[in-house]
Image 1 (cartoon, rainbow, N blue to C red):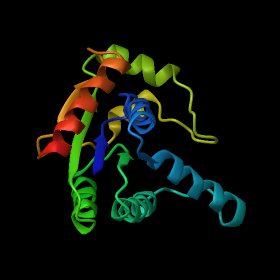
Image 2: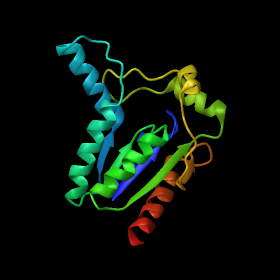
Image 3: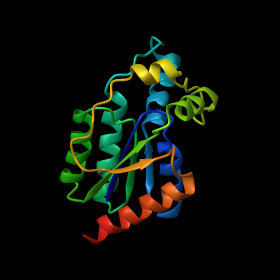
Length: 174
């Protein structure tokens, strides 16, 4: 099964993804890690200052499909901001002939969201995290499907984890 996460930076996607990956177990595909590895490689062997396009997502789609074909659970952890990326994840599940479920994380309290953005520390080496203005300016389309929406302003990480895990278990049973 492919677990497709999405949401603006600072909403708790990676925290949830890590908790799910440890508990299930599942493969955690973190776009931040993939994109930073591409930037680091470019800085070391290329021209440096890579502006990230679709490359990180394209790598993740392939790795996800390979692992889904092996019967693994895969967690896709990315902002997943537009319909094109969301459709692409669904297509990955289709090619691998497996189910998927979608979870969108939000933070309904703007002051709390801003505080998280301004105080968090990256766990990905060399990753420059976006500031609050970058988060506000980020292109982010409303979801067209019916993802489970989890609000990290209303629930702590453990409660979000439990809610997500129940949703995933229900999706597996269908």
